[in-house]
Image (tube, rainbow, N blue to C red; front, top):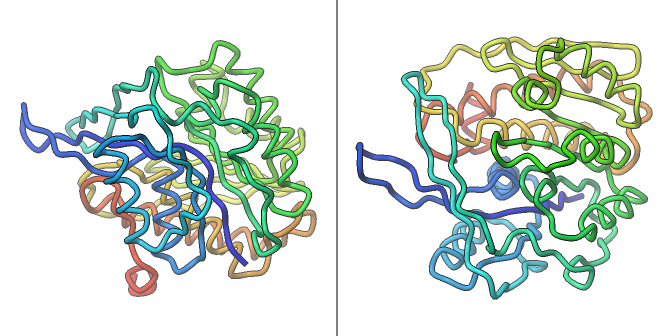
Length: 303
């Protein structure tokens, strides 16, 4: 049993003073892969690594954390960069320097057939929103024949695809699990109730739709059921990679309960409740330290 994560690995420039930044490994899918590895879930990362020092930094970071890079691609383009800003309560926003960079140029030969031990595939974020060809979406659609497919739209203001709503509708037809934030939904459907949107999405193809809501925790919509998991009260340093850590906690818990590897038609309420509780805890612990620094399995078990 293992998880394959496909998408961007980029460098976050995180402020340490008003005019000084430090380069830290980031990118939503890469953060999820690292978080899964730290939870002791076997994980492989399919990424296009830039041909520069930042690309080497990202490779070293993922490898050092136990992420399998067998399927990684050496790209000729430079590494993508996200310049991070924090608000007064630790909330993070991003300015992306990504034109002409490595992450968006997937071709069919770069996306291999999955081995049988891969029971879940996770993708989303900028990798899907900014893809320059349909290769990645087509590969994900094929992957669901043998694996559970999880997609996190993780949309960014100013970097929405022109056909954002149509794109998300396509992803709903691919995914078994959709995890979105209320911010994602607000960008797509301003003024609409996020829970009504989630219910509408659930009536499409996904087996489960999960919506994160910051201090309100998270809600899951599956079958005819809905579950709410309250947030944990923790001292917040920043929210960088909290959603990515949530993805990892969700997949890790579902894997532990033997729920991955198919279309999730038989999800039990107890499975979803356990997965939500784990995901919220992993995300909360990530918020207690700076940057994309998810907790280990041992740290999660202590809390």
